[in-house]
Image (cartoon, rainbow, N blue to C red; front, side, top):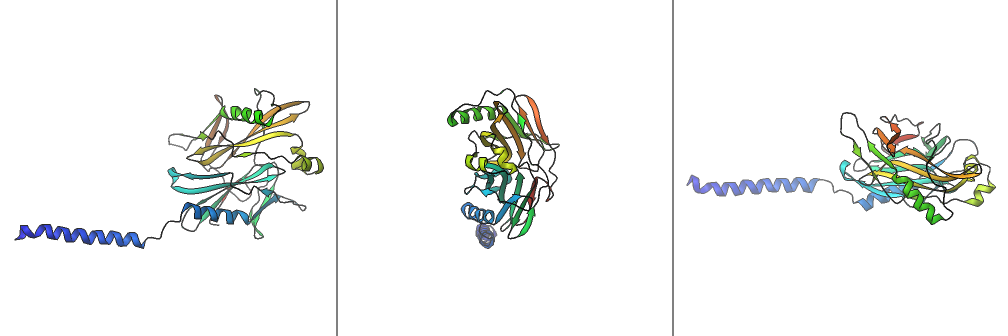
Length: 280
């Protein structure tokens, strides 16, 4: 009789365990869908105003759509978005938003400007980088910028492919980052505004011919931004580049085989060019 009862007991125990697991799953809060999270990103971005520091501060223009909607399976991030703020079409600030919990969104700021900035939300100061966020470097071996916008875009893609990047966390294997061949943003230069305004940013824009923002990504998560510009350098036309971090992790960038940019762990403060505003 004892032997004949074992299967029955086994079935009963299995059903009890299955019921417990099902109950636990039912009690877990449902995960928000990526599209719901992205709507939240847009709401938060709408609240933020970013402008140069100073009394006569004219806010930058936020590009209406995310420059990049992304995810990062390696870090279990189901959805993220990167927005850009511009001055006369030239990028000045990048902001990545991503969830770190059920109701918490982190805001990752990076200055792409050459001046001090203020970022406010509902009159609350969030971020105030005191100095430039990027440094421009000539691309010495680059050909003269083409006459047509179509051909200049092709040139920028070729120039971007000469760069490579990787995350280099200490005591771990480097993580190779992938360059997105299509820029996430192509400059929309406002020539009329550049000629009529005396602001520092627009004086710089007057020398510009073209430009684009490329990204090095993990998954589709931007870790490094590569800005490439065609500009007037006296009587000649030339190319230059700048790099900006979108990660706290140490990073390296090479141009051809030469190491041209290296970062350590990010030091984050409200006055630094790179800053993650927590729990917004």
